[in-house]
Length: 195
Image (cartoon, rainbow, N blue to C red; front, side):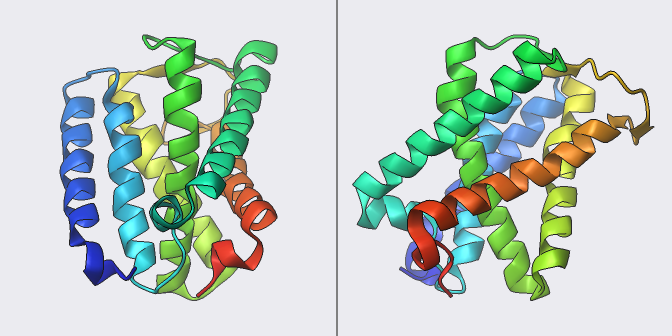
């Protein structure tokens, strides 16, 4: 499936992403639930412009593999939450319940981050620059709006910040971009990153 074959994914992605931005600007704490899906659709569409196998295409073609990918990324998300939030106490959420974070947010956010990296790599044509650009884009998309909405609160042990964002959070974005790439390659091999 090529991008032009599914412009509907792009339209839905843009509409949901814009709605998410509006929610964040009005300090509605659950803005990021809409953002996760909107950005997933948007970046999936951009990635599909190069005929890559995307997560949505995987869902359409092979639901069993998609479900396995979902379960692995769910486990990754639960691990991130357990270590960062419960074990280290580095953040907490101001409203949602645990189940919503684990089941809804993490797997789909990690889908969107993989597609964000792939679409960035498509434009920059360099893996290292694309990785760094994906980190920066992720920080802009997720951390900057949170400075307004305060949907999650950080309690990091080190106080050094850049633009109000703790340096540990900025470094943590390397994991948020890198882990989905590793999981896709592990589960899908070359099929998950095919040009």
